[in-house]
Image 1 (cartoon, rainbow, N blue to C red):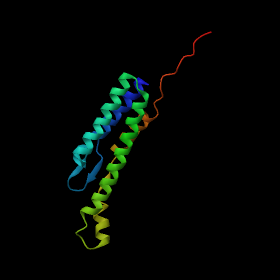
Image 2: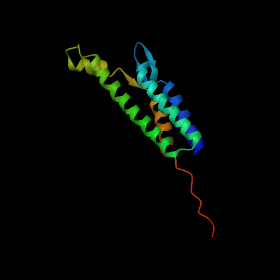
Image 3: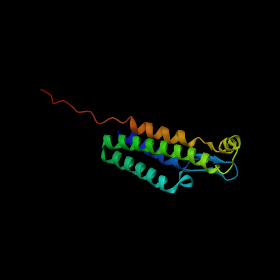
Amino acid sequence: MKNQGIIGSVIMGVGGLCPLVHLPVIGNWNYFDIDPTLAVMFYVVVIVGLVASFIGKASLIRFSGWAALVLVLVTLAGVYFKSHDYFSFVHFKNLVKLAAGLVKYKWGWFVILAGSLILITVRGAKQQLPAN
């Protein structure tokens, strides 16, 4: 349980620094470039998962995995809606779709997802039955 929690938290932490979104002229963005507030919340969840793995709280480790998954979904929805809303000044719908389609999701989301799935699958320590 301890090793699985540490590995999952470290993978999630590294995934937040990987490229998450690619913008044509600007380049790749990680979690801090997308939104610093969401990034701080994400890394607080990563720290909670890491600390919970050191103290041996399986339920808190699973909670941090689920919380990270919810934050990722909120961030993905935010990126999607912001990219479609950012070009709303253009009055042609096809041009808005084309401009919003230039924002590409990168491979860092899969790294974060892998780390959160590792945290979600943590099981508690087995209880030993007393010998008769």
